[in-house]
Image (cartoon, rainbow, N blue to C red; front, top):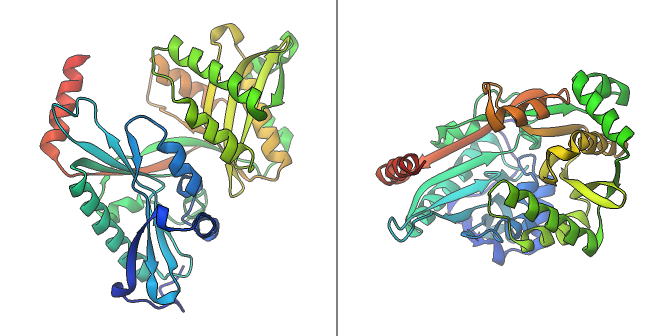
Length: 360
């Protein structure tokens, strides 16, 4: 967007409004039209994140009160309580998505609105006794997608420390055969093997499938010694995202027994892995089969991008290398994930890090 805009406002007109003060339909319509808005900004996503233990919603909007309450920016924001908070009473503030701006704003206007938003976030951080502020921008957000003219982390201009990562993205504006042939050879072999063994894939829908998914999720996390997410989290995904087409979940099964699941986010002509669960190595190849079905579904529904997930190409061993090899095997290209942080209390941050390293 250029530096001019037909929209005019003054700083004095902008008012902070918590998410609860904004009508959901108005909130989500704004996100649908904003090129800087992604699924992470949607109204229901804030409720989903808040189901996690220790997380609470602080999301807000900046509104032009002199223009019938026109929204100029939406900022998803959550407080995350720190472990051992009784010893070091603090938390962090996290924004999944960053600032979503009105498409009517010029570049200069967005800069001013972002300044006001960050002033408010810092104020909230002080009120909440926050140790740090973290922002995460999805590469599937329209203004950041492959082919954009942004080559440097936008968060740097807002005063954030640059803490980037990377993810594999597949261009779906190709034929099915082209995409299939771009898979690693062993990935195609795994898919054929799973099909030959008798595994089939179906869409997951309804309350019964929700219960099946959560049981599989709990068994997966218990097996890996990780605390399962609350049932309310997946219940909200089922009721607010899968039923509205903003997510699609696939089950892999054999003899009517579900052995693996893949839940994909769907928004603005793009698909991204959201949650997954599985029985483990005894079902080798099934996860490849699930992802291939997800990609085919995306093609059939005219999506243009598929994010297979964060990768760590520098890893030479361990779990991260295994995950990276799996995600890379679908032929995606590495693109940046823009992340950033502002340390509000550097001493507490590094003291906590030291404590974590000593407990290992």
